[in-house]
Image 1 (tube, protein in one colour):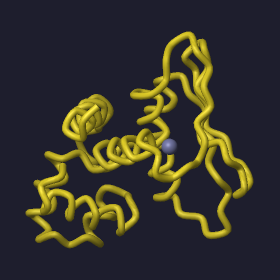
Image 2: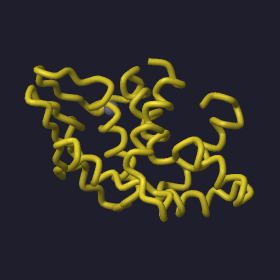
Image 3: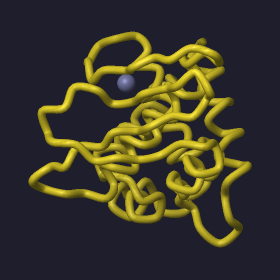
Image 4: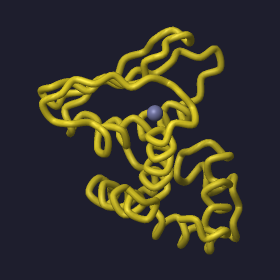
Length: 158
Ligand SMILES: [Zn+2]
């Protein structure tokens, strides 16, 4: 899938799950609706997601010494990207935490698109004069995620 297609997929999922009042997406709610579960594991755990043949799935989050709800939200959105783009009905598959894999890069594009949907993010960015701190708290992401999202629009990548 191209980045544009992934962007559109993420925006569609975001639209289906957004409530009127808030910008941030309730990723836990999406996991529940799709029949998934979330579990916590030790930091050395290498598996990030298990997709089962019956289409249920389990997202594995790491118990980090410095806990950030926003980081968990990103990991959940990333895993949802794998579930929607890279898992196959009837097949069990484990996803490991490896950087630089094409699928993980795509999952990160999906996560950015889901947590910061293009249309509403650009509208808010304009309103807030690209204030990344404000944007991050509005969309409930790490500030770094909001600033790379802005950067990707500036460079015409998304
Ligand atoms: Zn991944």
